[in-house]
Structures are given as structure tokens and as C-alpha cells.
Length: 125
Image 1 (spheres, one colour):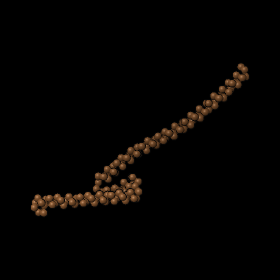
Image 2 (cartoon, helix red, strand yellow):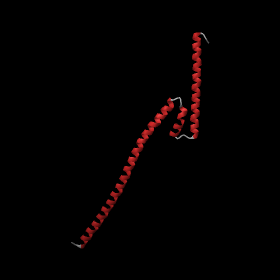
Image 3 (tube, helix red, strand yellow):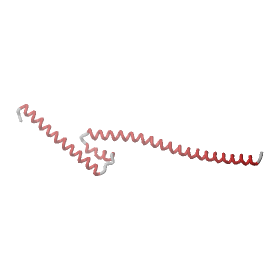
Image 4 (cartoon, helix red, strand yellow):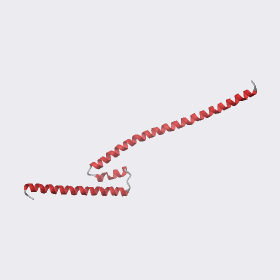
């Protein structure tokens, strides 16, 4: 075999060895990336489950807040849950006081009206 042919084959072998080495390095790099990505997927799946749980908690607290007459006791929970500033907590407490005042006024007015109506029916106004 002529020396030029041998030299050309050696050059091809060296080139193929470089390609093989590059491919092996790529496989190692991609395997490491795959491992990191799988760990991240597991972590995010865990967070997603926690997020679903947090949404259910927020929903339950807010429903309780709107359904109960004892809203002031839930203000700290709502403030923590929603990361309210001190000013926002103050505004929420003021709003609750105003609403409670209106409800008390309406109840008093309603009671007075019903009492007057009953008294009028019985002739004892």
C-alpha cells in the first residue's frame, strides 16, 4: 500500500477518534443535564402539589372570612396569607368596623320597625 494511502487512512482514523471523543463528551454532558432536569421536574411536581394545597387553603380561609361574623379574628390569617402591609391590615380592619357598624345599625332599625309594626297591630304604639 502506498504511503499516501496509509497517511490518508491514518488521518481519517484520527478524525474519527476525535469525533468519537467529542460524541462521548456530549453524551456525558447530556446525561448530566438529563439528571439535573429530572431533579428539577421532581421538585416542580412537588411544588405544584403544594400550590394546589395552598390554593385550597386560601379558598377555605376566604370563604370562612366572608361567611363568618367574626372577621376580626381572621384578619391576622388573611394578612399573613396575602402578605398585607401594615397599612393594608389597618384598612381591612377599618372596613370591617364600618361594615359591622352598618349591620348593627340596620339590625337596630329593623328591630325598631318590627316592634312598631307589632305595637301598631296590637294598638300599643
